[in-house]
Image 1 (cartoon, rainbow, N blue to C red):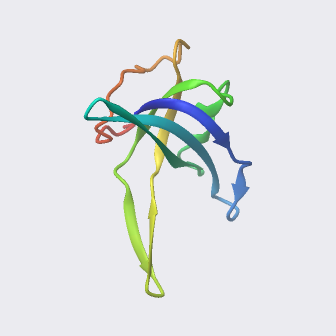
Image 2 (tube, rainbow, N blue to C red):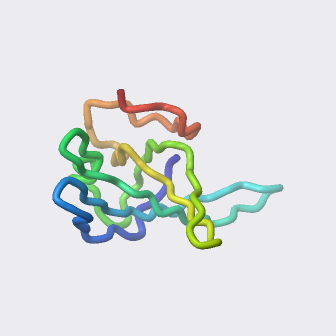
Length: 112
């Protein structure tokens, strides 16, 4: 998915081995000659085995980025449903990251 960064949260340590951070991206959906603004919050993680948060290095508010992400997942807790969208990479457009920054928004690609 390609869009503009509108928010980046402060990293939050969940426990000794897990830290999470969110990046919010505004993107536009075209429907019948109209463009509708959409916003999606993506969660990035840092564990002892994987660090998707490092892809935010050099990314700032207002930057155009391509986000590589897993399919959204929902879980039920006490009768309420919660959905998260986990990203494994945020790549600034025009920056050399060593990885492709294509506009592949199927979300099915995995980092390994």
